[in-house]
Length: 112
Image (cartoon, rainbow, N blue to C red; front, side, top):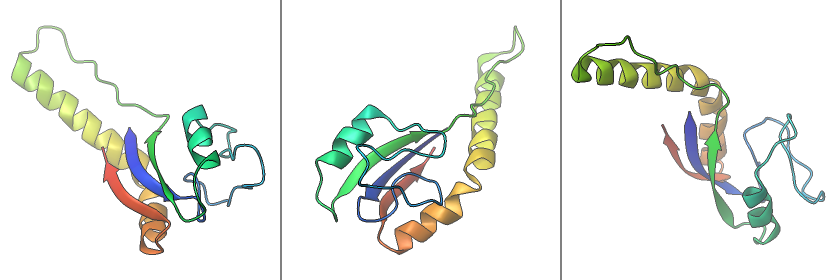
């Protein structure tokens, strides 16, 4: 699943509850992963500037459908699987991201 958001460098970077150490060359999440493009962008922005970030969550929907299923029911199953996975995987992130947005640390949010 994917989230698209704008993150303030002065605020929280990433989606963990821990505040990253911006004195490090590139802040990382709790798994030690942050895309090189995000690191480059963070290194070149002003403290209150926002950076557009696409977050791809680890868990992905199983999009396999039974063989021989007609196109319409197949598409319906895929859409339902994607929506269910998005709801499940984003459930714990939404309150944090909404709070960060309310505080001005995250700009626009788009959940997919």
